[in-house]
Length: 379
Image (cartoon, rainbow, N blue to C red; front, side):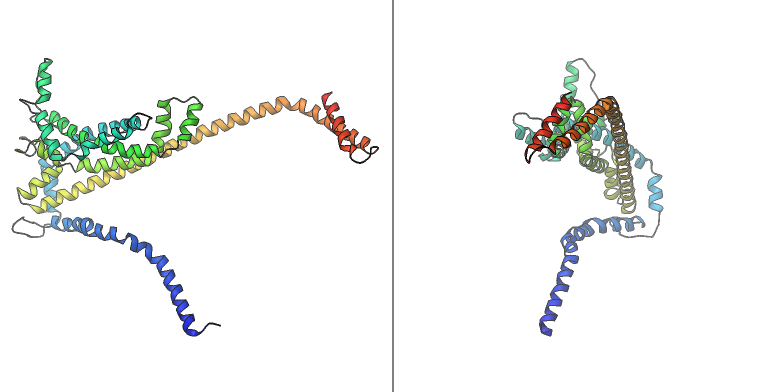
């Protein structure tokens, strides 16, 4: 029997242990949520509050306008122009970027010489600062003395107006984005490919599957979660693009006719040139809703593709099992007469051995029964 004081201390320790088990996981992850609330959630809520007022950069908060800023932005043709430019640059940059990243990751996943050197090399463009990248590509795509137009002129083609026309400017900016981010995404996909078990590839190779078929039927489905992550991050980064179009033409900041002014660049102009924080906050919230909607669509499409592939795989497995069962049934039917004859002979041999064994002493019975069985079976 423990004393009351010791019993109380033991109960207190048990309660403290249960509290530690229940509460400690939340304390471990609390720093992330605290930082997210300070630098993520609070600015998001505060921006929405600002979007409901006529808020000037210098004068501060004005009259409450409700959804007036959203209505004004949706009625502004420059907003729709910036949205078109953003999606155009996003498609021209993200699609080739992901295709090239998957191809580079597949090459680096092979047994090649100097793998570490090549992996470090594809990451170098990501390390270079965006300002340096913009200066290099701005000089390359210069309309008068640029490297690209000089090469086109040398082969007899007309120069391209990279900063004046819409599509060429989008291609030039997308090239800057692809050059910087392709290696980064390739390393992420490479890490996912290396996590795929090699035994699966070896088994498929022994079954006669080629390298291309193994890549599309085994590697790509195995790295689908990583592909979804890369697509979502590329979507968020592509729709928030600001640095490349801003530095592509520092004088006009979006082009003389706004031919490559993105949504974030238009937001920056609205906030710091027109000094209208209310409409700028409304633009930020509209862009946020667009990014969330596209991320949700990407998620559902990826799940539909995964479920469709799972159904196709299940049907293929079912067909193979049915063929296997049918083949086994045919084999059983073909072997049935012979097996019945062997069974009848075996029964006769066992009966004969049991009769002869009664007339033999001790240990000789098993030997004689085995010899009789062998002789009868041989007949």
